[in-house]
Image (cartoon, rainbow, N blue to C red):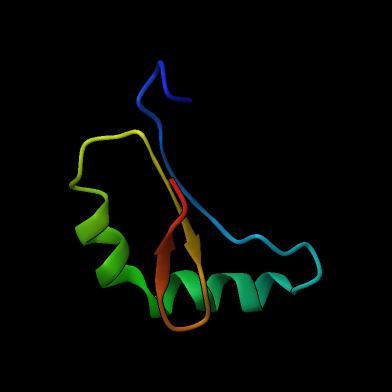
Length: 55
């Protein structure tokens, strides 16, 4: 991941529905678009109403 400067957005839960997953990304689309302009590598956790940088 570091060698390839990956840029990742993830939901760190396996127990939510596909609808809940989609809602998280839709609710945070502006923040994701802004963060995606940064150089990698990075990992963001996509929460219900915010994104949090993990790496």
